[in-house]
Length: 223
Ligand SMILES: O=C(O)CCC(=O)C(=O)O
Image (tube, rainbow, N blue to C red; front, side, top):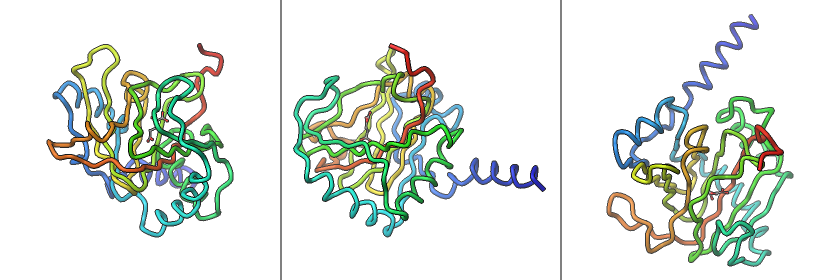
């Protein structure tokens, strides 16, 4: 019975993405870029409409006013973000905590190894995130993000071969997952309004909120 339950859980975890998966939200610069980021298939994932309308509204209710009380900053401690305000949040309403637990179960190999503090990031209409790789002393193998308010383009670029690129359309209510190679070997960035194009179509960038869950660093003492 225990083995059956474990197998069932594993099957659901491995297949539940099929309910949402929509590759039309990723454009690769080449087959090589696609191969690197698609094999294994959980390396880069984007799910449109991951949140229901109700879940989306509940999160917005909790974070919108909370973030508006902070001031936008125009310089970041490691120069990675321009025009932002941020918070590390560990207390959530019961409904929102349930959705965060669902994401941890769904996206992380070991949900127990995820960070309790969830990163809430608010970038202004003129804000953007420069290409960077999250420091390995703060974050493990996996980064997940929920998007709110404005659509945006996340760009991944291989750290050694800048021709290997993925442009990702992140719509409000979507969930992205960057794992292993996507997280360690590619920089990620959120494009500014003037550069925010997907399939030659301008995707206007307005104020955007994101909720980012990460797992524990493999080596917290790493430089
Ligand atoms: O806002 C996002 O979804 C991306 C955040 C990000 O790049 C980061 O916190 O390292």
